[in-house]
Amino acid sequence: MDNFEVVKKISKLIDYNSRSWNKEKIDRYLLKYDDKRIIECMTIVHLKDEIPIDLTIEISNMYNCIVGCRFCASGSLPETASFLTAEDYMKQVETCLAYSNENPKNYPNFYIAFTGIGEPSIVKEEVAKGINIIKKKYSNVQVNIATTAFDNTCFDYWDSINLSIRTLQLPYYSCDYNKLKYIIQNLPPNYDLTENITKAIKYKKNHKNCRVKVNFVVINDINSSKDEVSKMLNFLSKFKNDIIIKISFLNYTKKCLENNLSSPNNERMLEIVNQVKSKGFDCYLFGTKNNTKLGCGQLVQNYISKDI
Ligand code: SF4
Image 1 (cartoon, rainbow, N blue to C red):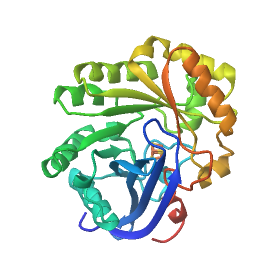
Image 2 (image 1 turned 180 degrees about the vertical axis):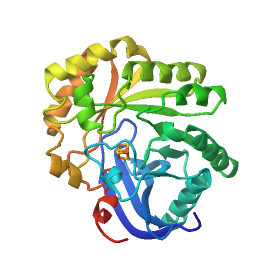
Image 3 (image 1 turned 90 degrees about the horizontal axis):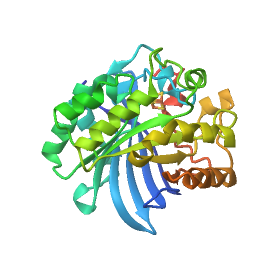
Image 4 (image 1 turned 135 degrees about the vertical axis):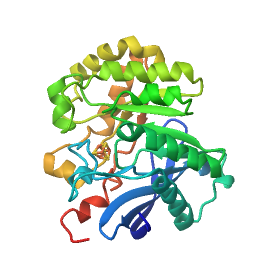
């Protein structure tokens, strides 16, 4: 693709639950390319009591995500999925930095996060190529990847080429296939979360700076009850010493409203944190109880039926 055109931007400074910071300053961009397709990327500054901790650029790796999470609009775009290139990742980084007027040199830590639209495992080679291109220009950059692991050979592949990854994050909604399939609509029939986490941990053991996170997105009537949390903890017990459980609020989107999906209130989320901690897991609360209008596909969702 030749050009990225910024067609929409939202900027916010919000209080946020996380482990090492409590505020984030966000510029979320809707980019148009090829005259019709749209993706999102984001500049994020994480702050701890007003002090900047890091600069993170979140990028997309595909148009029209193939995963199809029920709460996200990114998989409902017109046309079939198309994959972005390594050069396109770099263009998103440069666009975010330029439009947000940020310089990675001004921050103690600089991260690229494959947490925007798309499933990185499906494009594992392109992700590796993109990281290498970005590192050539920003040698201090560290990489966070969130993946549903539709292609779980990604972990062995990234290991085999010695790609340096700071965080590998896998989502958890349920260990019941049918519930999982309800949330992840395009879930492959042979999807095996146990195998995926095992492979991610194998990568981590070969790369001492990597950590594996399981992103437990808590959703009312799906996985929020005490019993469902216990099931998750039993399921994850064999990984206890090798994972961090991120206990996440579900961001509100139009798709959440359409499908009646929401997180429990703050009080219940804190109870879940205590339940998880009481079983000896390393965990923390992530997100915000308020509707920040910053969910995945937040900008894309307004353009689904429009002639862009
Ligand atoms: S939440 Fe992420 S993985 Fe799921 S459909 Fe949206 S972009 Fe794809």
